[in-house]
Image (cartoon, rainbow, N blue to C red; front, side, top):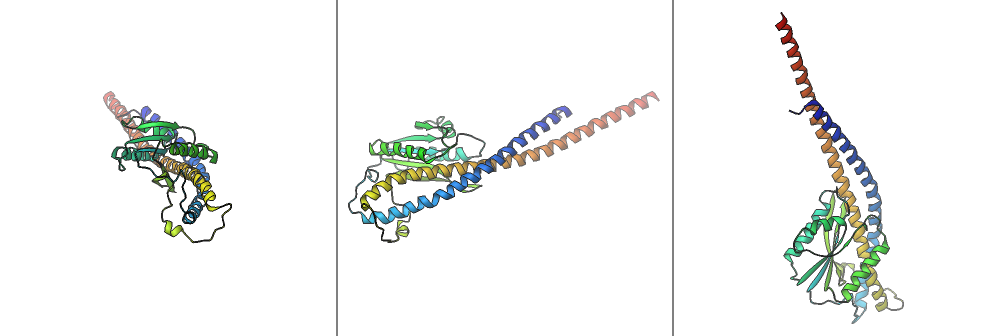
Length: 289
């Protein structure tokens, strides 16, 4: 059995850890509120853009654009969104594993698959796996997300696609549902596809376009790539803070349970020591008689 001093040191250590996890939970809760507000503000814009594109495409006959051009799928690029920090449960590991499974199973029978990663944790996970062709890693982006960053990423990816370095580009990210629910999501970023449920999205509204539908659609297609990346970054950040808040809350509760068990152990050891001392005193007194 551990000594009283050792048990007391363990209790003190666990209490210190509990204070840290409790503070991290509070920080994550504050960041989550801001991240959630940003996500909720961005979703309507992204969804409305999909509605406009769905209404605009049928009006443009024989329209050709590099971002709409579909080619035989031979080379693919996956853009993976993870975090730069840990202590958020399975947030980083789960989505990184999903990308690993996709690459290994290769359901589309690509000849070559490259991976670009946003976040240090995704790189830490995949670089130790064989067969993962990591071409670029972006770090310290999720800490301060802005639209300009998304625009630069969109331009880089669009250029890679139009120059035919890749035939399709996928985006993997965690879609924020609630504090305890983050859904791993994969979308085809390029070539641009019609939004899901396009029949429901098409409203038949008679829009007036200036200067003409083709030029408006040309601008919207490039803007849509930027908006999709920006929304995914915000969704991923909110999901990360929600996962970290949940993880730190669980860690704080576990620390409380451990402190209770160690305190009980300490009291029992202390009582045993007192009993032993009493027995020694009584035995010594009896020996003197």
